[in-house]
Image: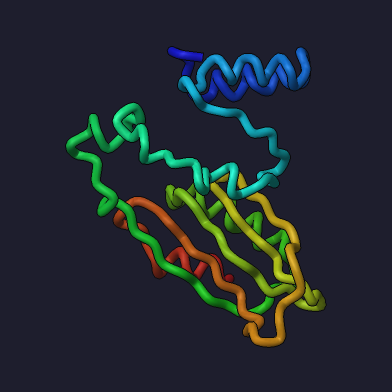
Length: 172
C-alpha cells in the first residue's frame, strides 16, 4: 500500500474485493494500519458511530504517535476554503437536480455539496451528498412536523467560488 497513489489504492481494493474476496482486501488494508489500529467493517457508511469515531478510545493518550498533515505543512491553512448554503423550494425531478449538481461541481471545482432536498409529492427528505463529481442521494426519513420543508444545500470549495453563478445553477 505504501507508495501507491490514491487511484491505484482504490483500484487495488476494488480488485481484491471482487477478485480475491473481502478477506483479501481486509488483509491488504490491515498492512497499512498503524500499530494498535483496528479495522471496522461497514457497508455504505453504516456502522457503530461510537466505534468509528473513537468515542471513549482515549486517543489523546498516545497523541505523540499520531502525526497529522498539520505537523509537516507550515502553509496548511483552512482559510483557503469557503462555504455557503443555498435554500430553494421543492424539486419535481431529483435526478435532474443531481445531474446539475454533478456538472456544477466539475465545472466550478467544488469540493463538496451536501444537504437535504424537499421533493414534490414525497413526505421524505432526500439526502444529497457529493465529493467532486461523485454524488449519492437517498431518502432518509419523513420530514418532521416542526421542520420547514425547504431544500438546503451546503457548498464547500476553495476560496474564490462564484457564489452567484452556483446559486443560480442550483435553483435553475
